[in-house]
Length: 353
Ligand code: PEP
Ligand code: MN
Image 1: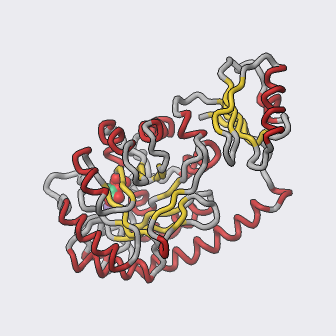
Image 2: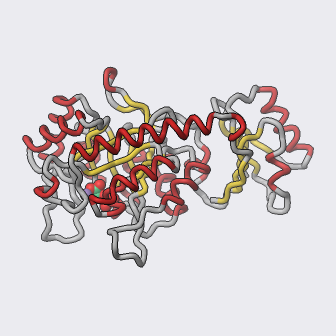
Image 3: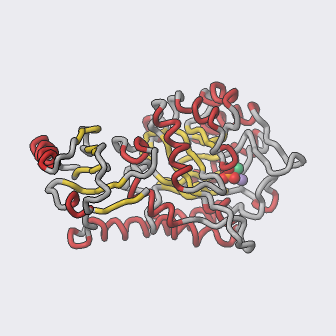
């Protein structure tokens, strides 16, 4: 079991929590003592009711850990900084949602330069664009590869936006690191453990998309590969799972967002483009994602959606993206106001993950 103590807990309160646990004959260990003190109990506590722990003064959350992804659930929470001084953004700060936008694929040098400018003008803080494209069919456009990474780097320099791009194999990581700011693991590669191990040694943040059939535990374990190797800068991205439904490309599991926001300390993004596969639904799901606690969104935005080389059915225009950014900022501000009202603050939670 993990006890997350209140952010404001003093050293004395932390010691009091540990002594209370010792009185219960439990051996407790402080596993993180920075901003969010965290105490781990190794003993079997299955027969002790959760309120026994949640009522100890100073305890904020009670987590019954069934998963092995201990570090992804409890590591010290730190917002992830990307970009350089003038365009630095904080991911997961809780203060504002973060918007990543851009075309599905880098289609050429001029195309990504134009799209970077348009995305930025419409409110993007991160430019997305695939250079290595893991396509479902071998006959579809496979991306420009390393050439695409170089164009992205030029777009970054011209626009000032940090860039996000996918790597599909360990061999691509070193080169990609010199061109991009955030590395993406796509849904099809969430189970690529050699890739995850390589990214665990990277200095860059990683956006880890959920595989289309992964449970939340499997997804957290994929994150754990990187966190346990030393890369704590992992952003989880819900991009829809495969269900029996055929009206949409995937089904966005907003339950997962709510579960993760209550259990993991890693930031959670939602990709409503791949999640729905339909341009007409992107705005609705983007707003819903922010309303249920997502820290940011990744959206496919193209200067001319109908001409997009890949995923044209789900690409939206820069104007449509701008409207989403405006709505989401308003929704986020309204909900934060509610969360900060003391009367509405949630009691200590019991979490099963
Ligand atoms: C993408 O972001 O372009 C992509 C291929 O996404 P996913 O891995 O979620 O399908
Ligand atoms: Mn795509």
